[in-house]
Each structure stands twice: as structure tokens, then as C-alpha cells.
Image (cartoon, rainbow, N blue to C red; front, top):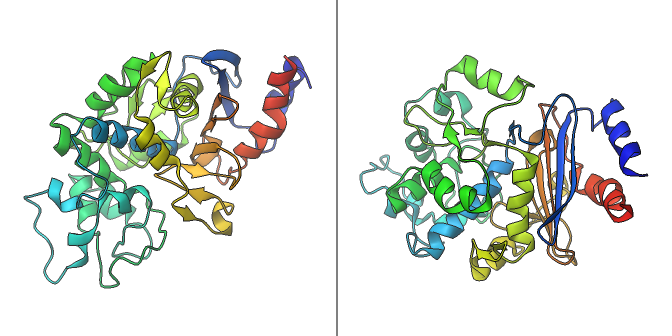
Length: 331
């Protein structure tokens, strides 16, 4: 399939690709693919959902590299000295940043308390109230979109600046990614529109009423900018010769800390990044609706894909490797 055929197939798709907005690929720090569909342009931003988590892992690494955070084994409560622990709660004292990054932190709920957290005035504080529990720290993987909100609070308290400002200064702007702004409104109606609206967005990041970014979702950016973030991973922490992230942290971030089950495609899990294969150096930050950062360190290629809301789309690694990369190789 050539470039024109590929564009037509995606444009006419009624299946898993019917929501694709943009695909952008970089190899050896040069653009090798750039295409858009459904009224989107290369510069347009899209809500990339849980790909946001992968970006938070990069920011945590930068804070570690700068010495703002001493270690991933630092206790979470070190960063919230004024937080009042609930009576009888003991586990929370032992939870570390590593537990947050590997999704092994324990929480006192069966299903994520979206309503209670997202109607509160301080989402980080609201999530802290659910951290811990009687079972203790078991090392069990528990996917927690709300739980990662604590990481945003940690970065802000460790650096003394807003998480979005830290991201702009040390990650986005050095990569040529447009400066991002806080979304602002966080009403129930706005949250619904934020997920369901299929129009292009501005370069923004959803936030709670205190202006703290949502760490588990809500970053709006383009596929081009996702590919740039992926290039940092594919190139060992550098971009255009500039060191963005230390090689040491990057190795930790992408190391297979956990083996996930069938629900997550039996992939390995690092620090908020997936390692789809045991025997290949391929990594991905994956979000709902098929949003993804794909990075292959062996082939030095990174791919960003964006898509508007469409539930249960988790086939993008396979799509990239079986359908997109052959088109790039042929070109």
C-alpha cells in the first residue's frame, strides 16, 4: 500500500480507524510521515487521554535529573507535610513515588471515585484521601487514572512551580512543542464536553479548580508533538543533540517492572509506559481512543497518533507495525 492508498483507507474507514485525526512519524530525528483526516491539521491539538500519564513519567524523570526529587523511593508524604492522615490509616506512610509510577500503589476503593474527586476543590488532596488501605502494599498492579494525580502535586511541591510551567520550560519548549495553557473550567458539563467533543482543541491541559493539571488524562496536543516526545525515548533521552532526559532514568522508565495480564495485552509495564514485547526495544504511552506515542529505539523511529473519542481502541501498536511502517518503508 502506498501513501495515497493508505490515506484513502483511513479516511473511508468505518472501523477502528474511523476516529483517527493525525499520524506523524519521526525517524533519526527527521519527519518521515505526516497526514491528517476528518478536518484536522498537523498543528491541531487533540485530547490524548491516558497518553498524558506517559508525559508525566517524563516530567518526573526531569525532576529527578534536576535533584528536585531525590529518588523514586521517596515517600509520597514527604511532599505533603501538611496533609492530615485519616485516623487509623497506616499504609499511606509507606507509599513511594515508585509505587505511583508502576501502578502498584494501594487505594481504598473498588472502582475509581470519579464523582467525589472531580467535584472537589482540590483533586490531589481528594485522591490522597483514598491512598493506602488495610491490605497494605502488595505490589499488585492497579490501574489508577485518578491516583496519578498525586504525581502532579509531587512535582509542584518539589519544584516550587506549577506542573504546566515545569512541563513548558523543560520538556515542551525545548522540543519545539507549543507552550501549553491551563484549560480552566472543570464543571461536570465541561468535563463531558472535553471528552466527547470531536473538534480540534487548543494546546491546553485540563486542570482542577486550583489550576493543577490532570496527571492521568487531559493533555491536548498534536500527533507531531507526541512523535517528538517519542523521539526522546527512541534516541536515548536526547532530541536534536539536546539532552532532555538522562539515559539512566530512561532505562528505569522503560524497564519491564511488571508483567501485565490479558486485559493489558500481556505487555510489560515500566514507569507509566508499556513495553509490548519481551524481546524488542519498543515502548508506548497508550491512551483511550487509540491515542499513542510509539517509540522503537532499535529502528530510531517514533510515531504519534491521535483520535477523537471512541471507546475500546487498543490496537495501535499492531496497526503501526503492520500497516503504517510498511508504508513509510516503501516511501
